[in-house]
Image 1: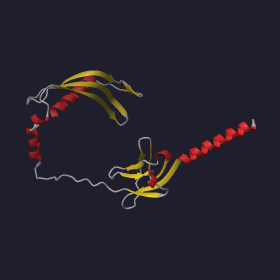
Image 2: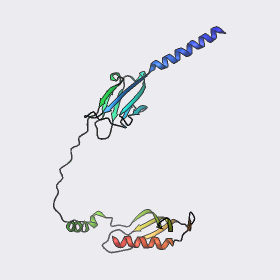
Image 3: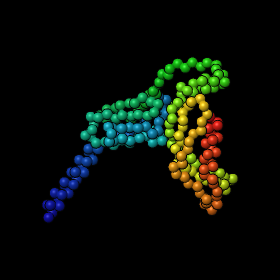
Image 4: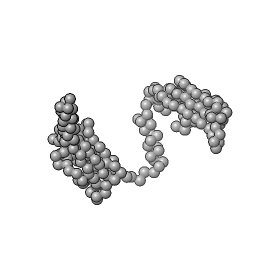
Length: 209
């Protein structure tokens, strides 16, 4: 019995020792070119292991020795990705990221007046808008309040049938799929003519365009 207990204890201790030796931990700091710490930087080994810097740019990374031949990928928006072999990592290391500089195409600014821009946009409506019949889906919600008191509350799921741009004014057709008009919100009694509200809002919108 004693021999069995000793053997089991030895196996358990050996297993724990092997597990402790197979996991490596590295701490460090991520900064920019001016030594300013960068928070929330992504540090990733493959697709299974990773971590992120905290508010102070500090990180703690744990990984198994079995992946020691892999590399650590460090990435952050606005900076170049950095790849470091795991064999080159050490505790209390400082990792410096370099900003990613993007070259933009030349932009020419001309002194067009607001009126000329609007006239050009109107002239190109037929090029920029659909000229054929099409269908849109939307969600409509209306609330009316004075201070904290509701005057109306309504919402609906809509299908809007548009005739496309033809140069002639035409009204869109609106199909109400589902609607909800609440008569009471909390302790407040409210009233809402849903169909009139939707028709009025869409008519106003169409007149504006």
